Amino acid sequence: MNTLRVKLSGRHVGDLAVTRDGRTRWTPEPSWEAEGQHPRLGADFLRRPGRRGGVPGLPPWFENLLPERESELRGRMCEVHGVRDGQSFALLAAWGRDVSGAVEVVAGGVDTDDEPDEDAEPSPRLGAPPAPGFRLSALAGMQLKFSMSMVNDRLALPAGGAGGQWIVKLPGRDYPDLSHIEAATMTWARYSGFEVPVHFVRPVAELDGIPRPWLGDAVNAFVVQRFDRRKDGGKVHQEDLCQALGQYPDNKYGNQPHKRISFDGALRLVTDLSGEDVGREMARRMGFAIASGNGDAHLKNWSLLWGDATRPTLTPCYDLVSTVSFPSRLGWDQQGGPRLALRLGDQEHFACIDRNASDALAKKSRQPWATEELISGIELARVGWRQVEPIAPQVMREAIERHWRMVPLLGHVGLTR
Image 1: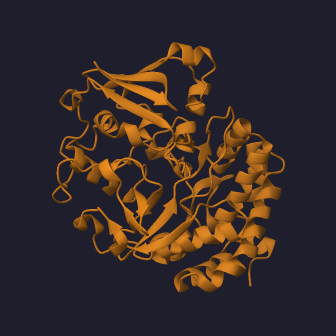
Image 2: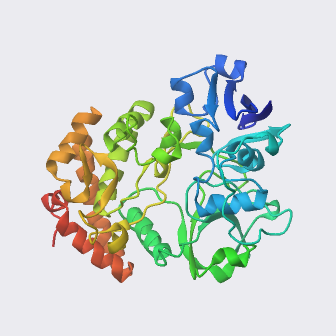
Image 3: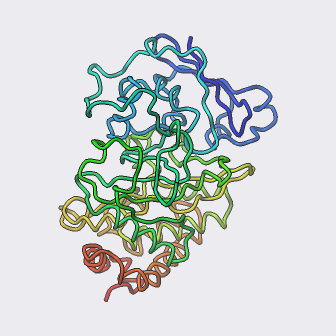
């Protein structure tokens, strides 16, 4: 039986063990659990304490530390470490010292050949892997991204592949304008009064250490400062809402049968965990997501910042993108128009978001102030847009003007021109 030791802020909190048939068992460290799980590992462990066993692959909380399956990001990492897409336990063993938050997963007696692979075929080859010894930090998600350091005003992969204060995201072939649109959306959020990390767009020619073939045709990259890393290299613990809800990444949109999760349920969870003030902030951010036409505000793009506290707060905003700025793929040129990442009330299309939908948020989340705060977030977005509009890409300005005409709730609030 192969094992991984799980540490949080230097404390041993439990172990993961995988058997030869590929089933994984989580065993909490007894003294950590007896002392009330301090420091906190995550909401799902508080909700369901004790030993867990018998799940194929990794348990959901740990699977969410890895890039999503069949993504380019995961494919690249499989190339580096010589494993297949389905071998999550082996990937975590390879990456576990530098994952998001303050958790560290330390390998002990792991033989990757012992782990059954769920894939019948090997991962597709993406090109020759880098030289031996090349390593990267583990980052969740789909998009190709890297944790990098700033060295003499240039961004470089840290020596040994660990650490880094900045996340650098490449736009991908299908969305060449993504870097500028994400930067404009994040700046819009800052002008609207939300907490946003330092961010900017940087030419890929100023990125050092990334294998040239990985850059593809990208001209620019989006760069954002990590909020789970301190300047002294210390780590700050966090978890995304997929982890907090015990969901695998493939349910980040909350639409799987018998596992449906809406904005209403997510708001109730965060309010219960963090208190009313944090819940109100989340509702305002939901309003901003509606006003900015962000159809990608799924469960992995909302996170809780634990640090060393007993109760979490929301992390600063991240991965905010006005997805309606891509009309044919994600915007209003689609049949039925763009979709929200999570349902609001019973509605999943922006075209159906009206006052009834916002009232349903308050009812279903059981938070009577939810509608008021959602609309407050929309009004904050209107004020912030006045400042960011002159510097936003033209395609984004046109998309937002159209979006505000098409969403009933935005017209009700007065955003139409």
